[in-house]
Image 1 (cartoon, rainbow over the protein chains, first blue to last red):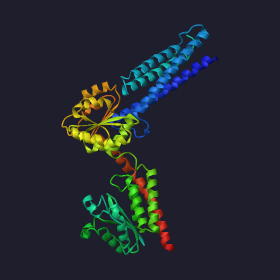
Image 2: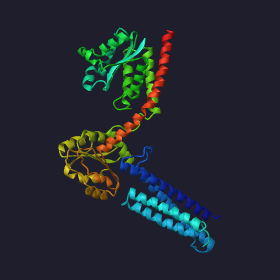
Image 3: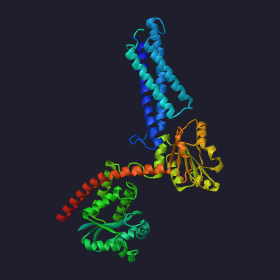
Image 4: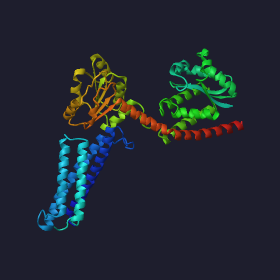
Length: 150
Length: 343
C-alpha cells in the first residue's frame, strides 16, 4: 500500500466524518429552529446548544470535510496515475466522489456568500447529504462497490 | 413539649393585611427578645418575608402556647387579633416540621420553586441564634430544613425552567444567539418589563443598549441607567440594523414594525438572526413577521405561555417533593420523640 493511497483513504474517511457531523448539526439546528419558531422548544437540549453555536459548528465541519475531500481526491488522482497510467479511469467511485465534491462545493459556496442563512441553507445541506448517501448506496449496489473496473 | 408554627402567608391574608404584622429586619432582634418572654415558649424563631409572617417554636403547653403566639404576632395591632382567626394558621409537631421543610424548599412560595426563601430562612435562623432565642431542638430543625431544601432541589425539577418573563427572555436570547456578550439590544418605549429584561440581558454581557422613546428625555434617562445610547424615535428603524435583540413596549396603537420593513432590514443585516420581543398591548410588531427566516418574534402571550408551561412542570414535581419532605419530617419527628422520652 503506497503512502499516497493511505493518505487518500484517510482523507476521504475524514471528509465523511466531517460531512456526517455537519449533517447531524444541521438536523439539530432545524429542530431547534422549528421549536423557536413555533414556541415549542425541545426541552432536553443542553444549554450550550444555540442556533448560533450549531450554525458555527456546522460551517466548520462542512469546510473541514470539503477541504479533506478536495485533498483526498487529488491524492486519489495521483494514485490512479501511478496504478493505471492515467489520471482518470472513469470508474463509478471516481464519478461518485466528483459528484459529491461538486455538491459540497455548491453548499460551501452558498454558505460563504452568506446571503442565504439559517433554515434554508441547513435544509439544503441536509438534502445534499441525503443525495450523497443515496449515490453512495447506488454505487455499492448497482456497480459492485468502490473502485471496480468499468 | 410540642413543636408549633403560628403564622400567615400570601394564601391566607392579602398583602395589605400582612404588612401590618411584618417584622422588618431592623426590628427582629427586639421582636425575638420579646418572643423569649412568651410564657409557654421554650425556643422560638421569627420568619418575616413579603410572603409570610410566622413564628416557629417549642412550647410546653400547646393550647396556651398557640393563644400566646397569636397575641405575640398581633402585638403591633392588638385590635386586629379577633379578626385574624381564619387568617392565622397553627401547625403542631409533624405538621409544623413539614411546613418549615416546605417553606424552605420553596414550595410554599408565591412563585413555586423560588430560591430566595432559602436565604431568608437562613437569615431568620441566624438572627434567632444571635438573640439566643433558639436551643437544641430548633437548631436541629432549621439545619434539617436546609438539608431538605437542598435535597429537594437536587432530586426534583422544582427549580427548573424560568418562571419570569425577563428570565425566559434571556433564555430565548441565548438559545438563538448563543453567547450574549458583545450583542446589542434596542429598547423601544419605557415599560417596566422591558427595563427588567434589558437589565437581565445586560447581566449576561450585552454591550450596547439603544433606547428609543417618543419622549427623547425619557430615552436619555433610561439609556443612562444602562450606560447605553438614546436615539430619536424617528430613527429607530435605521439603528435596528445594528442590533440583535429588540424589546418593544410602547403605547402605540398601531404596528411600529411591518413585515416589509423587517424583510428589508434582514437583507441589510445579511440575515443575521434577530430576536424581537413584543411585550406591548396592543402589539407593536406585526405578528406575520415571525414568518420571515432568521427572525424570531415573541409576544406577551408567548412569553406568558412559556412561564405557565414551566410553572406547570414545577407543579408536576410537587408529588415527589412532598414525598421527600414527608420522609425527612418523619425522621426528624422520631429523633424528637426519642429525645423527649430520654429526658
